[in-house]
Image (cartoon, rainbow, N blue to C red; front, side, top):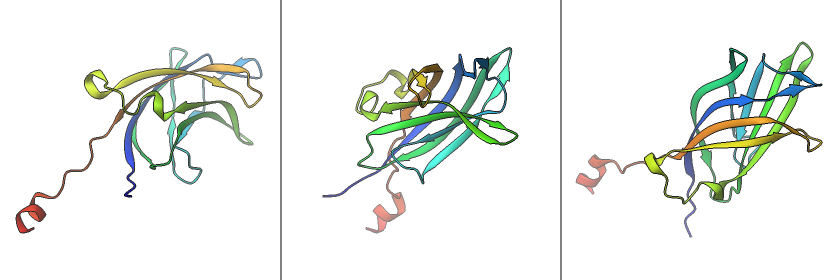
Length: 142
């Protein structure tokens, strides 16, 4: 039985309502996105405009055949390192295999801190990248 990976094109759009120790977190914020893998992930740094955080950054993420969820961790940098703001775990079944207008789906998920308390919302869009086309030259010679 062949196993095949899927490539997701994920665009982190924005985040809202982020707090650290009761204060708004609007600077030095970044996100780490992974699909059931600690080793395979991508990072995007947010920018703050008029009090809102946005990324507007698109990247590809390889999803293995046995992956069950997508994880978005929102963190911020301090002088002493990094601190967690919140995490959202999204079941891949929420968007894989769905018929989506324009092949892109916009989603918003609640972030929770490591104690389970709500701590903001992350907004993103996702689409499944089309599978690579076979090489036309290989077909002609084949």
